[in-house]
Image (cartoon, rainbow, N blue to C red; front, top):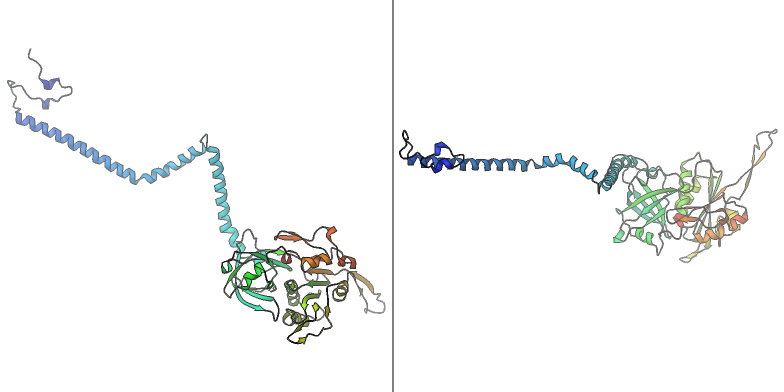
Length: 426
């Protein structure tokens, strides 16, 4: 038996590629046809491989173009895997809760709380919800021959107003004036709380002074900021029959605020007696511009007296000592002459007829002291301040001084603290 041709020994060989034996009958398959068919098979295999490679490239490019969608689809699974991770799952869950809480809180603050606070008056806003209010200097005037300056600022909008309840102070931040660091201090506005678009302050030009030096260099158009408001002495119309106020030069803003409130409300029957202390009689600030005007417009309701250390001699002329002016240091005699007594007795019902029996009614006036701590120590004791943030009247055993000896009780005397405290940022 003749040996099997080598083409038939190949596994899976096709008969179409088999070369016929030389003596095989009925075979018309020549060498030329064999090689042509073989080359055609190779070309078909190459074309198939090339087309397969092109298809893979097209699929790869399409997959790369759609890769972002696959990533988005994988995010839930990746997040779930991180949350359920044995070693890092707890930390991831805590971080997710904190981040979600912070994001929701910030969104509520920016979208709900802050817009609502900006629609309220300045003094009614929550300081932790509303940003500091920028105010622009409009004009700055110095009182004649004195170191008191009146600053008039414009509020951000023409419809804005302070809206404070007397007596209140506000924390003012200087900003970066002349490239100096920002400082803050408490100041009492002297403008009416319902005045729209503007706010005024009476500030003493201290030399040296950290805060006053920054305010001294302010020019019209410069901006400072108002922060938290603080209500100090709660005053309401017709609540007190009589108020006695003792203040020094820098404390004039407190009494000017009270005078402005009483002057605008003609239905308020409160009587205000002021003892204003200054160095000399020649240059008492606000004497001719504000004190005299308020006193003339409110006969019987506002009474102003002055206490000076000396009569003063300026430019060759001495200022005469008037009837309502006292010379020397503050003492019990000056307090008794210029301010209400510890107990006031009035007759009620007199003049109502012959059968009407008058009754003697007594009440205790309130006394407000706005002075340096050295003066408070001698008169009624210092206040207890909490840094430069707030203050309180102090424990009962710290109430001392000649006001206590005169008969004034601790509940009658109110001492202003932060705005004039010597540790504040002047």
